[in-house]
Length: 202
Image (spheres, rainbow, N blue to C red):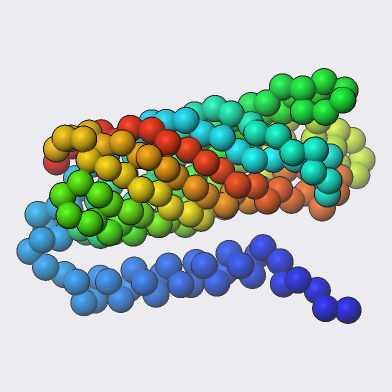
């Protein structure tokens, strides 16, 4: 029977594609413009919502809501390194009134394209860790109210400049993968949505 290749293979393909993109950009786009923008910092804060489900394999679907913050260090006028911390929580996710929370700690590359002076769009691929809390995280032998796992996210967003130093992130959408214990494959494939403000230091 044909088996789906799995998230690990998807991550490998995405990582390879990102590395090839970065290598190509570094080779052909070294310019005075990149030297002028390298080292710039951006800080972003905003709302964070994760589309999740319980129990595993079903769709008792709900939104976990919270916030996230990030630091973006410009390496080139189109390439930057991002570090992000995000968290979300939901109450009464099922008929038993259970709750669940999740924190993610992610880092990775971001590619940004600017459209005139006001608009910019970006895509990124981030890896790191997830921490589940205030929930039910079963394993084959036992269970816990907390759990830790690998995490991966890929997606992008759109920013609109309000001034030279402040932008509105009108939308950010990501696929978020975690491996928190759930006694049903230990995998979570979620959609994450957000919006917020970006503060730029030149």
